[in-house]
Amino acid sequence: MRNIIVKVHPSKANLKKKDQLAWKIAEIASDKAKINKDAVEMVINRIIDNASVAIASFNRKPVVSARQMALAHPRKTGANIFGLNSKVKVDCEWAAWANGTAVRELDYHDTFLAADYSHPGDNIPAILAVAQQKGCSGLDLIKGILTGYEVQVNLVKGICLHEHKIDHIAHLGPSVAAGLGSLLKLKTDTIYQSVQQALHVTVSTRQSRKGEISSWKAFAPAHAGKLAIEAVDRCMRGEGAPSPIYEGEDSVIAYVLSGPGKKYIVPLPRVNEPKKAILETYTKEHSAEYQSQALIDLARSLSKQIKNLSDINKIIIETSHHTHYVIGTGANDPQKMDPYASRETLDHSIMYIFAVALEDGAWHHVKSYTPQRARKKSTVKLWKKIITRENNKWTRKYHDKDPKKKCFGGKVIIKMKNGSIISEEINVADAHPAGKRPFGRQQYIEKFKTLTDGIISEKESKRFLNLVQNLKKLKHNNLKGLNIEVLRKINKKQLKKNTIF
Image 1: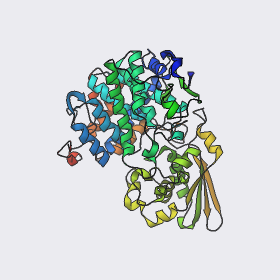
Image 2: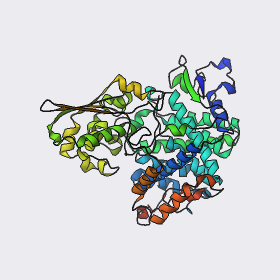
Image 3: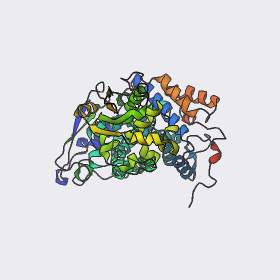
Image 4: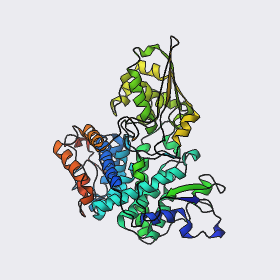
């Protein structure tokens, strides 16, 4: 790996392409690096994971809306939409829109946390859609996904968007563009322009995930993927982009992020070095914000120790800066304590999540979020007793550069009415690579079967799982088989009109 110093340069400096971050990203996207065997297996895991959560969300309103919008753009040689028959094809950018929304809706796929946040699995819908439309092979797809992960993970390590209240999809646009560059074997200069264009159009604020969180949280990454496809299409036609997008005098760093005086350090593999960043990412066992995963596991454990939850006087969760200020009481969002809040808001409230997991000794992607569940009197009462606070110990662990030492947990202090105290802590979620029950292929398959049970046939389940695990050997035009068709009874809610215009 190498560390790239990124800072603002005045226009008169005429910064050379080869010294720009977008060019260095393009270089690794267009190189001839060998693929790592373990990384290939993780790509397969994540395609299974994405399919699981996309199918589970098939008839949720945002997913239905996105799908209907996509169906208004049919194309004979296009891409597939998750859940529909593979004969149904639409323009790839619209397939990316529909499938990206489906993957993101339940907040239930993979994550990588460092200087900023990310869900690198958001790269897959857009890259897969283009691969299907262009008749690419399984190996092409693997290379594209590995590049997408590599770029996003390393941007997340080096550049914090959150401190400037910029949404994390600003790293997703460039990573999808780079991944598409690898997939399509584009020239370095074309990828360079695509990365810049994709960043330029995907900068948006974190209000997407603040206050009353709406369904846009699911649409946002899909939008970034769609815009990245359009950026690549444009640049493949020989068009240019705002440049230099990171280092320019009026660039993203200069006026959106930390300004001309800031130096960012972005790690990147050397040209032709295998791309393995996907191995640093981790998926979710529970459908909720990643920083709640370990605390859900801790709540499940503590629920067995406390006979009567009404005897609790107060619960303090000591955790990292990010957890406290994003999903904790440090966010100062009254909506996070509101029983009538949206599902999207509740899955960003560790107070709500911990209360339900403590009461139920479990977490469910549907049952834990129903209006009836959120408004249960005992839950609301317990919920109001929970506060979070930052502890520097957990903030340091959160930012540890060693993946084996990085932690996303916390310490829970439960003060009982009789004066006794119960206190326990957890470093990482049970499903984390360093956790009690790390996710391997079998766990991904179990998650897939659980989430698709009753939605797809057993025959369809076996077909998909057999095919995806043979991904590296899939020939050109065989990627349509990575789509999954839901049962007819599940598809009955399709709207008659694909557009309201």
